[in-house]
Length: 302
Image (tube, rainbow, N blue to C red; front, side):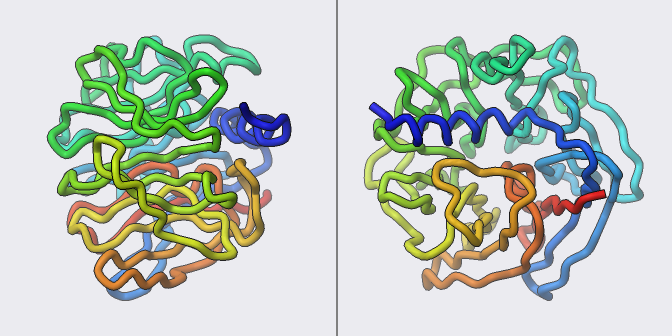
């Protein structure tokens, strides 16, 4: 069983998923790893989170105040029709074939609504959601390369572990079974690994495993608290958020963080940039289709 402290930190982590912090200026930015340049795309005096880059590169998909929105390259903002799902959190992403969006939505409102988080899909153009997971809470994080499965974090028996399920629905499969928090699973483009973050070592580090949960391997081991590894389309890198100070099992917003790039060929890690962020900055797959850039959100107080 978890210690009370670890459980409280874990609960705080997921409660913050749905929160929309007032008095915040959010900026959607793009980082180019080939030129090491950072470009602001869209700024709003409001709180939004978690950009996905559309397959054609025309827009970004974000979440804000329970809805999903497109932010176009020219600054236009457009709400996506998600039907009854009006409590969407920052777990959303576009399928490999570019036709479907998977997202997490709280079935119930209120402070305990996160306990009812459930995964749905909707066509890319919007429409009526289709339920994927029967059990709650479930928090989407990744599509399999063939688009047949989704990977997610779920609380079962008071433990947060990583699961997969057919996108058409059915029985879920547990990939991890630790008493520590395992979170943020996302498939490599070639399908050979699932990247995730885990505190099983005593600190929050980036890990990877085979898609069946075998061969779990810790990739980072340093002074940072590391979250949400996002593998590049070319299979050469992962980008992730690193808190400068230990956060236990939480990933709070409005903290000093750096974005770091892990080279999967030589296992080197370099700091790309620093910012105020954390929760909402890089929770979901956000690479450009060609793998040269990725999107993220930085924050500042109004």
